[in-house]
Image (cartoon, rainbow, N blue to C red; front, top):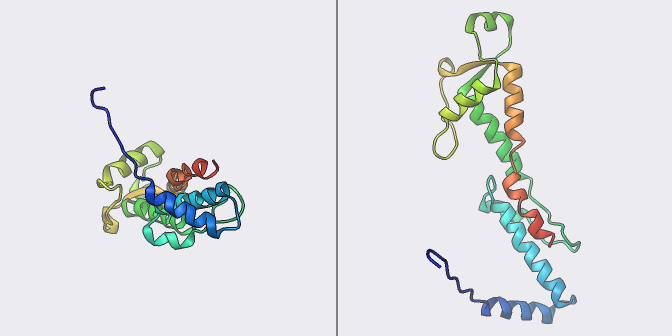
Length: 165
């Protein structure tokens, strides 16, 4: 097979740890393996963006199958960062006088296009002076921020099916 990948997995250390846990645990081998795997998946969830390695301390094993206590910090941080990034580029305009004077953006498509253009290779935006920010009607900006914040945590949620197996 051209371009194939060959992989060898060393399991000796894992098996030693598993046998040690079985000897000291009051649960059977399958229960020990499930609990260990859930702890591993919980750590993966914690470090999947917007999580960080520091968030691992918020995870722990539970006795119920398929249940992992997930930290709330990464989701909170992600939603806060989304709002901050968007507000770095756009300026909410609400009064009638400001709307007449500044002629703000009133469509989601223009907003999305400008936001995408302002992002760097990491997906973040740099803060701007107030005069450099693009004026947007308050309602459109609020709905756009909410729409973008709904995507936070979807990547980490992909680990849930692994934890339930």
